[in-house]
Image (tube, rainbow, N blue to C red; front, side, top):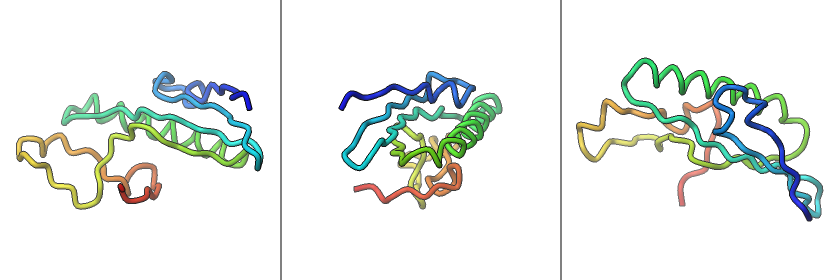
Length: 111
Protein backbone atom coordinates (compact mmCIF):
# COMPACT_ATOMS: atom_id res chain seq x y z
CA UNK A 1 0.00 0.00 0.00
CA UNK A 2 1.99 2.94 -1.27
CA UNK A 3 0.35 6.29 -0.45
CA UNK A 4 -0.49 8.57 -3.35
CA UNK A 5 -0.02 12.29 -2.67
CA UNK A 6 -2.68 14.80 -3.57
CA UNK A 7 -2.17 18.52 -4.02
CA UNK A 8 -5.15 19.42 -1.85
CA UNK A 9 -3.61 22.78 -0.93
CA UNK A 10 -3.80 23.73 -4.60
CA UNK A 11 -7.50 22.83 -4.53
CA UNK A 12 -7.95 25.36 -1.73
CA UNK A 13 -5.89 27.92 -3.63
CA UNK A 14 -5.46 30.46 -0.82
CA UNK A 15 -2.50 29.74 1.51
CA UNK A 16 -2.07 26.29 -0.10
CA UNK A 17 0.81 25.23 2.16
CA UNK A 18 -1.68 24.95 5.05
CA UNK A 19 -3.29 21.81 3.61
CA UNK A 20 -1.88 18.48 2.49
CA UNK A 21 -3.47 15.20 1.55
CA UNK A 22 -2.53 11.65 0.76
CA UNK A 23 -4.64 8.82 -0.63
CA UNK A 24 -4.16 5.52 1.16
CA UNK A 25 -5.18 2.23 -0.36
CA UNK A 26 -7.16 0.49 2.38
CA UNK A 27 -8.64 -2.99 2.06
CA UNK A 28 -12.07 -1.38 1.57
CA UNK A 29 -10.76 0.99 -1.11
CA UNK A 30 -8.99 4.34 -1.29
CA UNK A 31 -9.22 6.78 1.63
CA UNK A 32 -8.04 10.38 1.46
CA UNK A 33 -6.32 11.69 4.60
CA UNK A 34 -6.28 15.49 4.72
CA UNK A 35 -4.12 17.48 7.11
CA UNK A 36 -5.11 21.09 7.78
CA UNK A 37 -3.32 23.89 9.58
CA UNK A 38 -6.10 26.47 9.90
CA UNK A 39 -4.76 30.02 10.30
CA UNK A 40 -5.10 31.37 13.81
CA UNK A 41 -6.22 34.91 14.40
CA UNK A 42 -6.17 37.70 16.90
CA UNK A 43 -8.39 40.75 17.21
CA UNK A 44 -6.94 42.39 14.07
CA UNK A 45 -9.16 42.78 11.03
CA UNK A 46 -6.36 41.48 8.78
CA UNK A 47 -5.92 38.14 10.57
CA UNK A 48 -9.66 37.67 11.07
CA UNK A 49 -10.27 38.18 7.34
CA UNK A 50 -7.37 35.88 6.43
CA UNK A 51 -8.87 33.11 8.55
CA UNK A 52 -12.38 33.63 7.15
CA UNK A 53 -11.06 33.64 3.57
CA UNK A 54 -9.07 30.44 4.13
CA UNK A 55 -11.99 28.65 5.83
CA UNK A 56 -14.33 29.61 2.98
CA UNK A 57 -11.83 28.35 0.38
CA UNK A 58 -11.30 25.14 2.37
CA UNK A 59 -15.06 24.59 2.61
CA UNK A 60 -15.38 24.87 -1.18
CA UNK A 61 -12.42 22.52 -1.71
CA UNK A 62 -13.75 19.89 0.73
CA UNK A 63 -17.20 20.07 -0.86
CA UNK A 64 -15.71 19.66 -4.34
CA UNK A 65 -13.98 16.38 -3.43
CA UNK A 66 -16.56 14.95 -1.04
CA UNK A 67 -18.05 12.47 -3.53
CA UNK A 68 -14.70 11.13 -4.75
CA UNK A 69 -13.88 8.82 -1.83
CA UNK A 70 -14.10 8.64 1.98
CA UNK A 71 -11.88 11.17 3.73
CA UNK A 72 -10.40 11.80 7.15
CA UNK A 73 -9.78 15.45 8.03
CA UNK A 74 -7.39 16.19 10.88
CA UNK A 75 -4.85 18.75 11.97
CA UNK A 76 -4.53 21.97 13.90
CA UNK A 77 -7.98 23.46 13.38
CA UNK A 78 -7.42 26.38 15.77
CA UNK A 79 -10.87 26.06 17.30
CA UNK A 80 -12.26 25.96 20.82
CA UNK A 81 -14.68 23.58 22.45
CA UNK A 82 -18.22 24.86 23.21
CA UNK A 83 -18.38 26.86 26.43
CA UNK A 84 -14.65 27.61 26.46
CA UNK A 85 -13.63 30.36 28.85
CA UNK A 86 -10.05 31.62 28.64
CA UNK A 87 -8.09 30.81 31.80
CA UNK A 88 -6.66 34.31 31.82
CA UNK A 89 -9.04 37.20 31.05
CA UNK A 90 -6.49 39.04 28.91
CA UNK A 91 -6.82 36.25 26.29
CA UNK A 92 -10.53 36.93 25.78
CA UNK A 93 -9.86 39.36 22.92
CA UNK A 94 -8.14 36.53 21.03
CA UNK A 95 -11.39 34.58 20.86
CA UNK A 96 -11.16 31.75 18.35
CA UNK A 97 -14.27 30.24 16.78
CA UNK A 98 -15.84 27.33 18.60
CA UNK A 99 -15.76 23.92 16.97
CA UNK A 100 -19.44 24.12 16.03
CA UNK A 101 -18.84 27.37 14.15
CA UNK A 102 -16.11 26.12 11.80
CA UNK A 103 -17.51 25.36 8.36
CA UNK A 104 -20.74 24.16 9.97
CA UNK A 105 -18.95 20.87 10.74
CA UNK A 106 -19.53 18.79 13.82
CA UNK A 107 -16.47 17.53 15.66
CA UNK A 108 -16.33 14.74 18.24
CA UNK A 109 -15.67 15.66 21.84
CA UNK A 110 -12.05 15.57 22.92
CA UNK A 111 -10.90 12.39 24.62
